[in-house]
Length: 433
Image 1 (cartoon, rainbow, N blue to C red):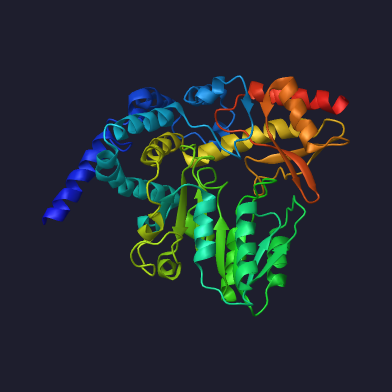
Image 2: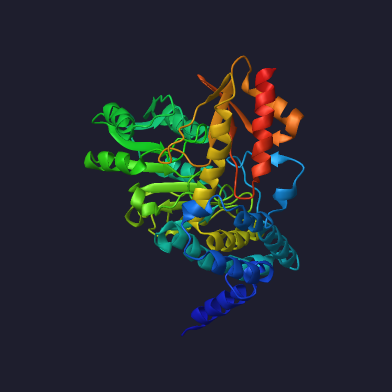
């Protein structure tokens, strides 16, 4: 083994000693013994059955400082709070960094990215050589949007229900380069996959090069039939970009099984990783064709790491992702998915009985999980939002998007049933005026 390999091996071991994927991880320090006993008690139980087991979830809730917050946080679709172990990991790595930034950042923490890449890939059911770690879904997807070669007149199909940052990136390419950005308009909820697929199919012309799909629509919680759209698109030689900001770390799926070509996500939503962490997946054979947003070395390289040249950034935040993965994996994706869906159904099925209140999200499990939105006749989203803050210190997200004027509500695993009872009580009071 040459000197370079020896050094790389040493640094990887040094990082492992202090990192999340070691026997000395903060998760192991705080939770391993108790959660091992918890898992033995409930081993083999069906995830749907476990979704309503309050004894189990009470233990999970204790892992979040947000569970005791004076604010009822029901905007986890925006940014989720991190578990205590993740907060402590970021602080520990920050303290380490400040002992000597240029040493600990570049010589120790930077080397931990490979272990982290492998763990993120394992959760995503893909190759580590297809995963780049960055700061959020916007950065991941804009890297792809700006990095693809397109010619004047080439068409891209998206929708008015995609995330604004992605829409603006496509519009900027349209303004500067003369590509054609076509946007579909959906009225959700839609409980018919074929209706959605046909909408994209009918918009295709011989000039269509890419389709941009949001896996879980952040406005309404609609789960889109990504695989079906991708299969249709590929039959016509069209590539597919998937915005997975609200799906990775919540829904149980393997990224390649969506059959898209590119996938970006934020890790600070349902994975509960540190705020300001994200991930890009690019199908291996596509990496070399995407220009990096910030270039270093060969921009046509087929190495996924070319997308990680962000300059100086927060290594403590990046390494804190590892403890979020420990926390998530100890619960299990399917168990988390079913619990969060149960919480959404718990409040939503009660709320639809409230006079003047309308639910704008499907309650069928194929079409929603965490996010749901409501409106109350005669009140604007901002008025409902303000009343929820005033009556119950309940934080939600008011949305005014075209014809959609709603309040989005999104619980997480740390959310208590009593919090949702308070939500329904407050909505009832608001409806009565």
